[in-house]
Image (cartoon, rainbow, N blue to C red; front, side, top):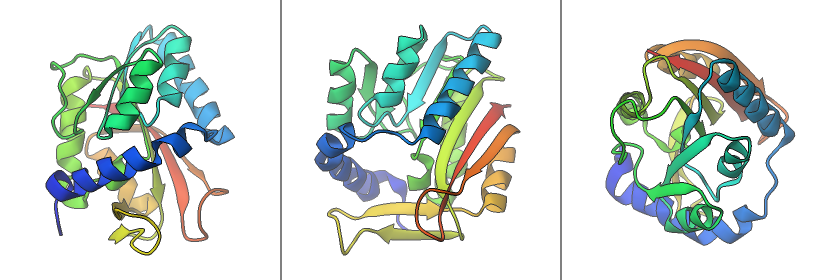
Length: 208
């Protein structure tokens, strides 16, 4: 198994650089918009004002979070994603989630959608440890990933270049990973998306 650092991260950055214009035109599914609004309500109820988005994409969620008065910062592997975010007024850095350019306990909450599915199982605990380092103790972390039968694979070889690494986890397997790093306060499956053997797993994790 190749690690997510090195070639895998470089391939992800190149892929999303190429895909950025098309992805900037996409509208997120209603489930995601609804989940983001509920997460904002949670942050307001707890008086939390700063959010780190891990894997901003072209910035749609970050812009929405900032529009309701939250202080938003973000990271992404893709230089094009970072450019889109900065042009929209988002503080965004090009960086790996395994080595984020922020001080300890810098943010009161975290948001990451469709990012941790690109991290191999052998590095997922390292990724959560780094997230836990930059978020304050007890911070809520919203996490969305594609799930299904447990599988790690390089995909897209026949359709897109470069191919991307995916780690797909079953609901049970993903919950076990989350529980190693905090308390699961919410776990939803959005079954009306994706292929027949895939669904979207949305969670809110209270970090240790």
